[in-house]
Image (cartoon, rainbow, N blue to C red):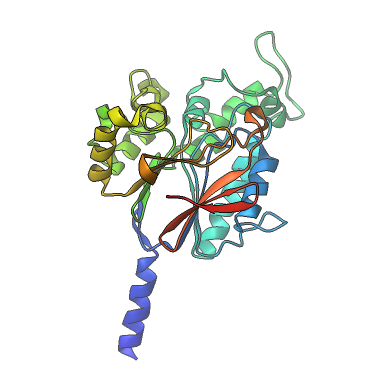
Length: 300
């Protein structure tokens, strides 16, 4: 009996976190890229990948859902997406699954007050009976700012999340990691991002706005493979992974593999602002698959 108990405990440990940002023994991962305020499209792809039901409740079991950031801006329904992710976080944990809502550059921008890309519908979503327009701002602007600022309900929630995570031998993040940060640990990158999100005064000159930082770097998606290869090899070695999954740079509708499958781009342009494409990455059984408009295909 004692040996059976020990075996069961060991089995459970395989599915637990090694650290808050590092996970091992995960049987199935679903990764979805930039949402940009398109709630309906987000719900559709979550249903197509089998993690929610028709009532938007978690049915993914022990699946890990990774949303690689950029929930807000360019669309009207970011608040609804945030609320859904908050609900699914709790439901997934009860089912021994997990929801990883990573920080993208647009989450960070909203927290520290760069609102250049906020859709007018976002402000409308935060209006209440007391909301009034001013000469400078539309009705709902102040409420939006309070909710998404560092001390607001959504701002605090964003600031608690990771920028980079590792699940088994795959690294997930929003944009990429440039040469300046090639030897930084996952833990240090996340710690610095959280520090800056909590204190916007630290943002100028910081990680959150650095073009080589994890929220903005595009080299893995756009640089010539011949010149980017040495940097990629260094990143893979630093984090002891075989694959890096990124959003941030739109692909025009398809999940894109680069460098022989060692980099996977998952920002297919879900939002109407980018074409309303449906696509997600699935990792299961040691293999990678794309689901695009409900059709599944194998990836390198």
